[in-house]
Length: 264
Image: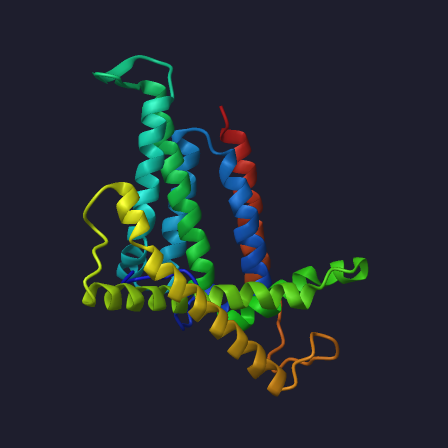
């Protein structure tokens, strides 16, 4: 609860900050598909190297990213344990009662965990290096060709950007509610799993009430400022596609070709 980074934006002037939001959105969404082409150590090493390079040039403090990834590590660990336990094939590495680890299970646990970590890092870099307004404009521009088919591009982009923007706010609100409940004697750490899950009910109810209240306040503020949708709206900042944006997509294309060539 202390270091949420999803939805946060860190201002800066790094090469990633200067990229057009449309290029970053295309790169990240395509990368999330391309990453599944990797199936061996060399291809995963290529993906990991690109991710480490992106983190380095982003200008975002590495400590901030690592602290924010702590909650995700538990999910990655759970995924790795499931693969170690359920995936069969190859020789037996370890046998401890009903828990048997095969070679294929160890490989799958390692590759899937690394893939999960790479995806999380790339998605996190998108929000850390792109302001919510730029994300909204970029997503709306990418969805604008679909408006001829009746797709509300502006409204969809606005909803997604608001959702990203309020993730840290709701996370902070949850932390405050938990601390307030603990001050009143609530216990969230002892007892069975069912009891601990049930103890979070006094947290969820005020959290939902707070979220609905914030949504209503935001809707009233938008109406008071004359918001009537995307029709006829102008922008104070225009998006400009530059050479760096084209280069980023060329890198993605070369990465795709490389992963296809390296597949077993």
